[in-house]
Image (cartoon, rainbow, N blue to C red; front, side, top):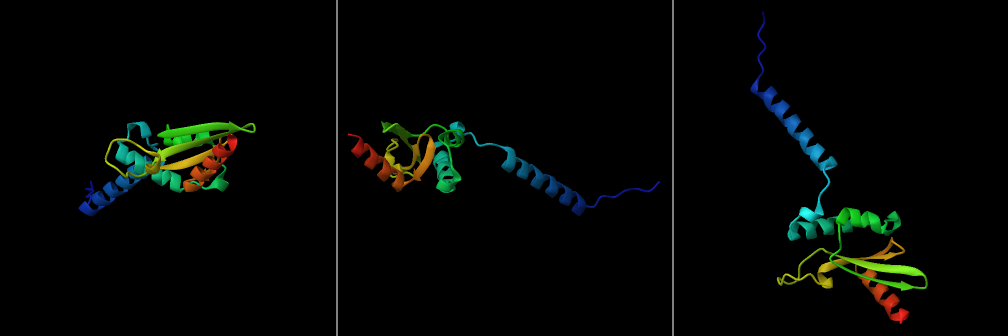
Length: 134
């Protein structure tokens, strides 16, 4: 009866393939839980996700909330039958004081729950709308 010999290189190759497959499975199917992240990991995660948002992608507020979780700061107003809401997500740190401020966040502006502006443009548009609402 012939003996089968498995070389060390064959075992190494099989192990490497299994490792790559498991890593890909985690990367493609494992959803990050923002509620379980440290604040450092969460701000990096927020920055990464927000940097991929494009206004032409027709992103809803629900999609953002499902992906990024609760915002760090939020403001809203009703003007001419439209609901405007700006959500601030922390994306960097300016001061080591334990307090998240708007200048440490990236703003996302929604009109009737659809994303219409990101970053400084979102803040400017919201401030203009709020100033004209009074």
